[in-house]
Amino acid sequence: MVNEPGKTTDNTDKQGITRRRFIIGTMIVAIIGAFGSLLSLLKVLSPSKKGSGYVSTIEPGDLLVYASGSNIGMEIKASSFNVGDAELVYPKGKSSNPANLVQLIKLNESDFKAPTDIQYTDKGFVAYSAICTHLGCTVSWVKNTGSPDASYTECFCHNSTFNPARGELVEGGPAPIPLAQIGVKVNDDDTLAFTSDFKGPIGPQV
Image (cartoon, rainbow, N blue to C red; front, side, top):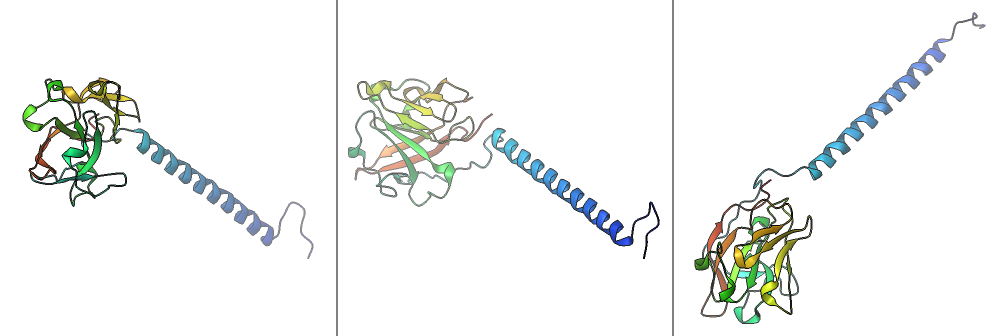
């Protein structure tokens, strides 16, 4: 069959429609993919809601155990700490809750200044939330071996620094408030236990 000039067969029309549908479908998928990637990026870059998702389950009497290293899960012994030492710890049996992560520090008792709550300390031990109040990263201990009292807490995500001898007051960086203190004591068997919940909010506060 000979086609009239300017006209196409049904098969040609169907092929054109199929190609258009394929091109439109591909564009829609690409747009949806790009939009999804943008949302994911914004979620990463945007600050979390204040304290969102951070609810501690620590109770007075919970024993402190190592949260990292070769001793992970083992009970903390006070005699293993020297002045200027610090460790990330959890309450025993409650390591699955990231809100329970704590930084345990030993300083000279004479180093503590306000607003550190002295009644929350014992024999130079003091403890704070290990979750940065900026965007929720885990903080690190920067030890000054030459001068232990000059050691400090830092969040390496955005370089917020905190003073552990002064209630973890913010001394630099974008963190809006100090790390919350929590009570600790040394037991008669040399283990350490929590004596309270956190004194103040934990997690991102921006």
